[in-house]
Image (cartoon, rainbow, N blue to C red; front, side, top):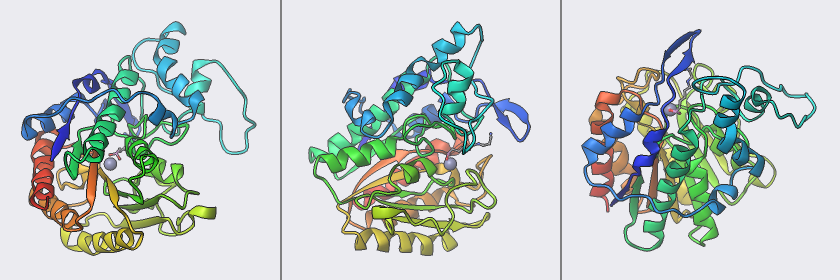
Length: 339
Ligand code: OKP
Ligand code: ZN
């Protein structure tokens, strides 16, 4: 088991977020990564595998925007974190506007994902952390690699940020794994929140299975994606599987959904699994409502390990910072047990 972490990810530190009509301290904070590092111990640093795998998933205009958004914000006379406040709703014509506020709206879908001075650097190294974990598995050094990514990625689409996410680490790894001939590749997303960005990126793609178990979007963010009737489109029809569960779900009622997910993954002929792991399944999570105990993360990982698949795990959410490291360590212990 290889664990990859890069300290350049700590450069991303937005100050606050809009939460239920109020400003609160930013949940997706550097201390999250520090909590996990402290619990896991020694890690491997990321290697720089360059922009090409990022550009295989994200739109070039979006990547260019992300690089300069914060400096454009400062150049416009603003201070602190760049945050959008107006969005081009469906049906508006596509205008190629230059004003930072217009571009923030064009390349995002929520107001909960500020761009700080260190955002590009951290997001870049978060993606490289995920790619390095894949590289270790591809080289045959290990069958199970864990990428301690931050910021997370699964809400980011081809040309949009949102939900604390900027670059879609799981999608970048999955596309790169397929390019290297390691397929069939499947993505399983077990974060509490639906991975709308990952789903969108591969929605019409029949050669990438996307399976997600998450809180029902009728009650939970991101609301507009993750309903059970979303199954893919065109050539991708049938290659998306959504398994929404009610608030209050614990391991006992989660496990049957996981069995369904793993059946679909086996039926697909999957050779490599990319796992989007959210530790926000935890009962103590401040913005989520499942009821996992620490040991349930071990049970979850053991069930995944029993599949026998090569697995690249990419860290997504989890906001109970003090318990986060122990929960992730419990997961890693279960994954290791099956290696
Ligand atoms: C990211 B991940 C505003 C409420 C919306 C967005 C939640 C993003 C979760 N503060 N917050 O999937 O864990
Ligand atoms: Zn989440």
